[in-house]
Image (cartoon, rainbow, N blue to C red; front, side):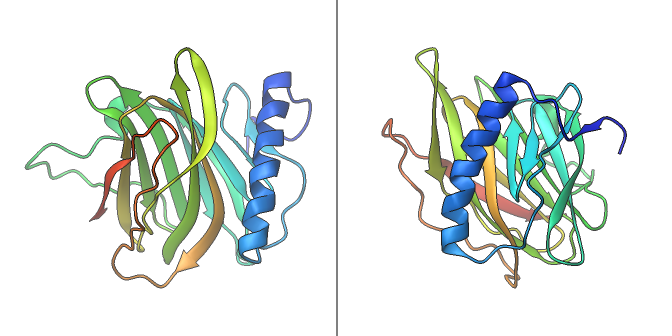
Length: 206
């Protein structure tokens, strides 16, 4: 995996890792998770990272995870993306929705003033996907969060779109596990500290 770094982290990266470690402790209290190495996985020139089963997705990037036989995941790629890479296709479009490689899942985050913040989740791991989500918002010139947010399960081969009205600069994924859901299960929306909630998500077949 060319460019994958496992040491020499910058101050900002260490802050992100500390944040993820705190969130991870909460995930471990909820469900038994597979053992992960303590060493972070991150690519040169990218802000997204993966540490001990918790993924941080930075705005403008798409992170690809590969599921291993023992139930753990590895970060295998981080791409820079445009807003068009996370938006649902135009009406009548025949292009594929899910372009994740077999055995992988992808999380892409971007934002634009007229559409808000969008997270696109592509599931090609061969089984349904369940996870917990937290967002870091940019409000009043400051980063606020992480705050819990509602996310849907993503059945095998499907794509999920999650939306927020406010600028979301980071999305934290934890508690990764498989799901037997043949159709999406969406919990009640979680109210954010600002009083706004995430927009209703949508899940589509590929």
